[in-house]
Image 1 (cartoon, rainbow, N blue to C red):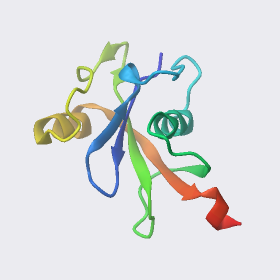
Image 2 (tube, one colour):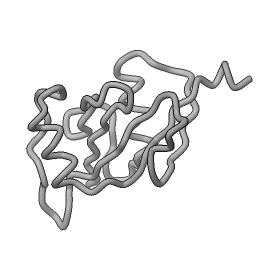
Image 3 (cartoon, rainbow, N blue to C red):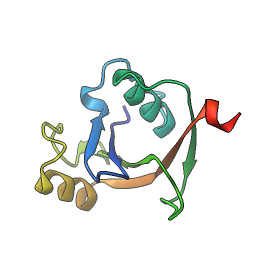
Length: 110
């Protein structure tokens, strides 16, 4: 089962851990599904999502996505404090960066 940890590119904080995200089905879920489920859980709807290899310098909003289930084990425990610098550093160091999900307001794209 895929377990993703999403770090907001604007704040640098962990906004979500799919191990603790209601409605996320890790068995078939992608990084985009994780971002969409996270946004829905905080009341953000109507966005378009695009998975990129890395965070482009010109992006407005998005999440760096890390995979925490590596080789059948958990690289880090379930995130309890997304603003803790040690927790953020552990995710970046021990989890696999799978890409950057760019989030755009679908209404603004027109």
